[in-house]
Image 1 (tube, rainbow, N blue to C red):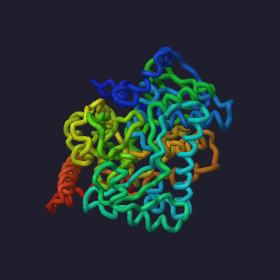
Image 2 (image 1 turned 30 degrees about the vertical axis):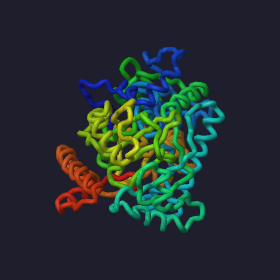
Image 3 (image 1 turned 120 degrees about the vertical axis):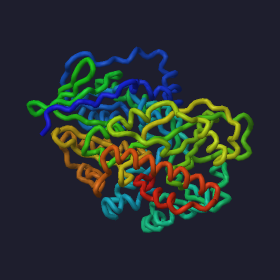
Image 4 (image 1 turned 90 degrees about the vertical axis):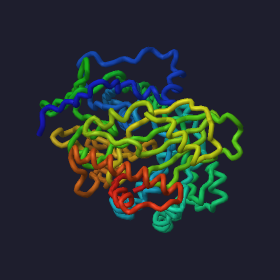
Length: 476
């Protein structure tokens, strides 16, 4: 058992405030002009449960704990502002796990897989009800999610998933022809599958709303309080911070991509990046996107309309992180927004020439199964983690919070004994520098393959073979 763990140092990066660069966080913070300055932790306190990370997983876990038992003393520390990490830098697509049914079945068997898929649909409804009940204006748009084909290599990408889901009458999928898919996408597509249960929303407003509810329930929230280490002593764990500490019986690490700092988790995670832009059309669109859309490429193109009339476009897999600093180095402004705008114009031609309002890059931790997983940190009894959302964490974080709240209170109810509490199977990924150098080689091949597929051009054999090595995928 280890007694002490310290956060690896990364020089020259202001990670705590990087997320404020995102369109979502900048907009959400405008609404808080009358809020007092965030209160960092400057003393040594005790708690029943300390949560590290003020995003969806951490905030939902805090709320779940207080809902189960208001007497539980919960302290939450966040390195920057609540919501400034992945929760405030994603695309705002609230989805369920039915598209990952093959991965769910592979990991947990048919019965348990379908239970998790159904629970993820209920998570969407839970978020809807929660926002209505607590007056959170998350700008929810009930416009569904379209899983589309943008070129011949993507045709029928959903075939195996739909065949497996056909055994269950409550699966949400509706297969569409080319005409209807193109109408919903606002862009040329070759067909697709619609999931009407999914919604678009403003992720940072949701995160900031969750923070306010958590505080109202008695959770002690300390922003601008980065964790500097863990110290195990006398059957409890102390979370050390820059100017204080929290001694707790249980600790929940809700830090997503930053979980790669722990060796037992790093071998199951690939830290990559998604780049996003928000644009404003300069003229009325002939065919505006009506749904949240993802194509079926390995390096996803995705886009969605916003309630303001602006549009978001993003692309996954454009960066590779190095070792324990991977998440930090991929958390910044988009390095080449002009390339993303070019890709946007190819994919959604009506957006050509749109005004760029915002751009940012955010880390994404892909698990080798494409599924999130939860458990206890080796050597630190009572310290639990949740990670591996693989680009789809808004809805599944509700399930994750239920699991983590159960683990933190030593409960065996619900999903605390499900397959989601097991790490992805397999040998894991190689160490550095092989991991990074190999990742760069594979990423370059995938980008080349992606470009050729969009052009319906022949792909050379070396590119196909190298691209096939990639272990990451949104769908599994």
